[in-house]
Image (tube, rainbow, N blue to C red; front, top):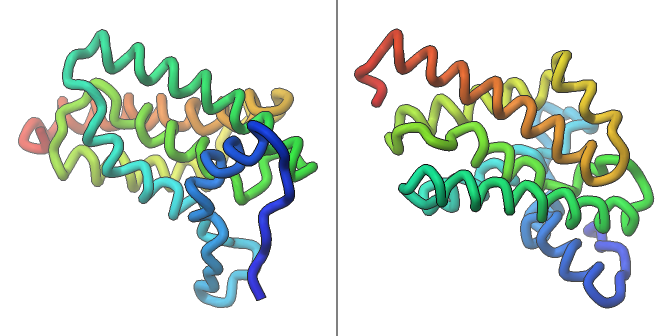
Length: 170
């Protein structure tokens, strides 16, 4: 017995498709008997990895694409939230996707950097520390996406510190 996505007409169906990572967030997961943890955020972040490698090399184009992706994610997540009828429904994973992209933006494209960015992003996104956790209080899609982007910006800075300390990671 699986969970079915809510019915939606027009662009709402397309928004649900993208917001749920092509319904990847519907994969049932039970780890260590934790019922509250769905694993959707982890799956959404995993889905972001190959696309992070496809971000443009040119810094200007990368920032433009990232800004457009974040803006689009806010709009898509806002529509999905209305369909799910609840703030930051766990089935919405597009925020994790743009979050990981932000976490590794403008950094060297090495396995070590991507791995460190992935691990730190999952940790900080899961823990929801202030001040970026406060961004979740913003309404609609803005709140859904902003806290992940806030965590990702901190991760990006932490990875830069790690690269300064251990240049071999690059």
